[in-house]
Picture 1 (cartoon, rainbow, N blue to C red):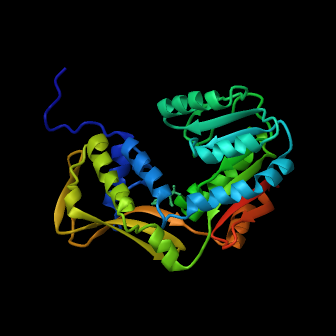
Picture 2 (cartoon, rainbow, N blue to C red):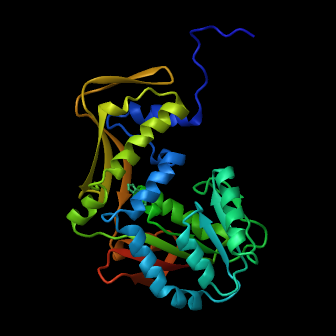
Picture 3 (cartoon, rainbow, N blue to C red):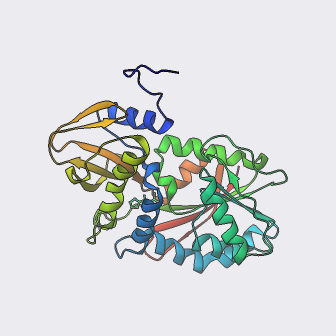
Length: 314
Ligand code: AVJ
């Protein structure tokens, strides 16, 4: 078969998303593509940074309150984790649960999921691990027999959703396993802007590398030609929407290509790469209520910087 040279190749889903985001007046790139292997390693380093408080704060809350949470959940529960691989936090929860019926990690990357499940079986030889390879934001079917699941969504990953999407996602979760489950939701809370901005502008520059790595990943995986030396990292609090936004700022006038399509960038033009919404406890409760959940308990740290919300299906 001969293909005419000028005929464009069909676009991959990733290229379609990138093209869509760069075609907007306010340019965006999808934050889910931060996490290639290098990005995942950089994120692990972010979690160790002195400025990045969420991971260690959530861990401290769990260490303090897991005995209580476990008692309230009761024995023989299924634990379901959309987006598997929260490592230590999940291990602590599994250790605290009273005779868990099983654990269902859900991830889009089948290879990563299998490796994670194998690893986990080593540490928990008696645990029934049932990995599910799926897009957890789409409709999905939990394994047969998983009823009244305890859904575990830590790390303030919910903050990456725009509020309307967060609501739709929580609504979907309320129907998993036929409904009437419970949800343990970790959410980063509103706090002084200096603390928030420092967490995303660390002095060691790891977050900057994490942000720029998105371009490197897209160059490899989506046929782009971003010149990483022509962008700088910026993160700032957006008070209108209550979110930290990360940007890559074009250092000069330039043209970038995505699968043969050209995009002009003005000097200082910003590409938004991530939203990290922060909530007050009241806002979380309202969001939960609007999507089929009611609050059983909220656990926090002494400074109220992070919340672990125990929700139950209405
Ligand atoms: C993993 C999405 C919760 O928003 O704080 C860390 C990702 N971005 N530093 C966050 C992130 C920059 C993180 N989440």
